[in-house]
Amino acid sequence: MNERLSIGITGGIGCGKSYISKVLSADFGIPVYDCDKEAKRLTASSGEIRRQLVSLVGPDVYDASGLNRQRLADYLFADAGHARRAGAIIHPAVLKDFHAWAEKQQQPIVALESAILFESGFNRHVDYVLFVDAPEGTRLRRAMQRDSATEAQVRARMKMQQPEQYRSLADFIIDNSTEKDPKLHEHLARIVSILNSQPPTQPEKLVVRG
Image (cartoon, rainbow, N blue to C red; front, side):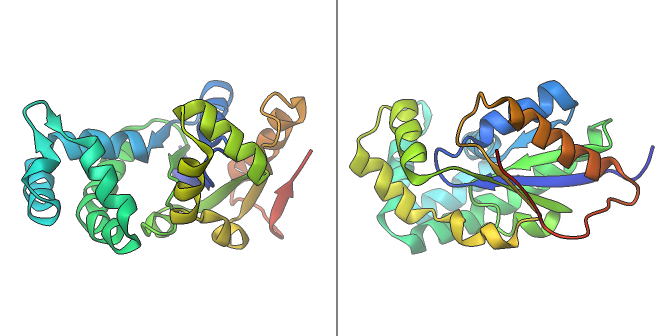
């Protein structure tokens, strides 16, 4: 088997990163590491993370049932500096877990999905970056429906997390304005084909739009 490649999947809130990940996994056999999901697992289970978060946030960040997610979320979204400090605790553990997970995969390509791929520095640990794009209005509607959140709540999160500024740094940009667009699969197939070429051929940034 040729040397394994990794691709980071990122994009703004409500862009449909998870949908793209599901298509890549189901239709192209690419295993995807979900950073958000795994960070939650590690934050709840790691004694070292627990010790450091209690020191940073306070003893009420954990309760009798485990991690107090609302307390942690309140802390994270209160100030951009809070997110950086918490990230310095959680991100190294997630990165270590990702590398261990990737080593166990049998496929030539693996993917890492993260809303904060660049902010966390995870982009330096993947070979390519796929930016999932969608209009702000579409992303807002999706996030409100998905999280049963108000427009103000979603806009506040958008303001705190602005991966759009990293769009120009991505190797691939895919338009996910319409998740059921039949061309979406075709565009992903093109990206996978490029990654499967040895060595991967990419004469210029690939922007695929319907």
